[in-house]
Length: 351
Ligand SMILES: *Cc1c(COP(=O)(O)O)cnc(C)c1O
Image (cartoon, rainbow, N blue to C red):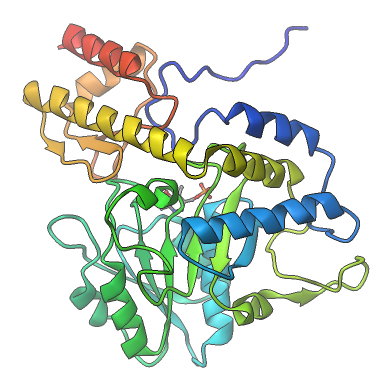
């Protein structure tokens, strides 16, 4: 029998995940047999998880962080909505967000039975606090901002959203699932140190270069974790705040190893390379008469005609589309300049 092999990353321009750092890969394998969902039994991985939370606090400007390593951004976003719903004093709780939020919030709203209200974004595709204010009422439990949107890599005006949350007496969640390991090297105001952010999503398994699954959920207050905790009668520990029960120790150990290797200089170098690559491919596309959305973070959207998109897909390029049908190239660490040159050569060939 032949052994199944994964795809190579040679032509992957569509993914928000990437090749794990070698140390992260090794750590994942070492910790495959551990379950941080049972921290008293699996103590060494529980200690690593505490280290990851501390590190993520450093990345996001939070001195005494609470939180855990989730299965991904989806779980972290569900938990943010759940915590706000549980802590808010609302009869019929709602969440107010820009329309640019990740689809995981739809899942959260459905599972948790909260009303998700989304407002139009501004002309630069960022959250519009005034449009969001129109949707707020006394039952608003949570305001959401995105620091690095999935489709266009936009950074919402988090301090203005914090003002909105304060006025509404609601919690503020920032979704930095993808952007969280790029933003520390920019001038954007996005984290706990920049504004009254209550909770955050930041995924080591995206730009953090950890193995899947490694998401991050962070909270400013211990009371947020208390609002998520349920009693666990037959485990050695007495309560559990995570959404999943048994969970991946490989992801936790992998995140710890990646952070130990890369924070901050390795992430900064990767960001500088990714930004230069995004700018290069954006101008290469613009030079060919393609309408390009100016990249803010290393993610390029461009209005490529459908037949060209299909022809490039035929040649093995893995490309994503925005909801509006634009080509979307995510300049992850595995995306090299050589790859992009080859991509543009193929594009010229197909035209
Ligand atoms: C990828 C992403 C998510 C979802 O994360 P998963 O790890 O895929 O569950 C949430 N929010 C944003 C902004 C993302 O880019």
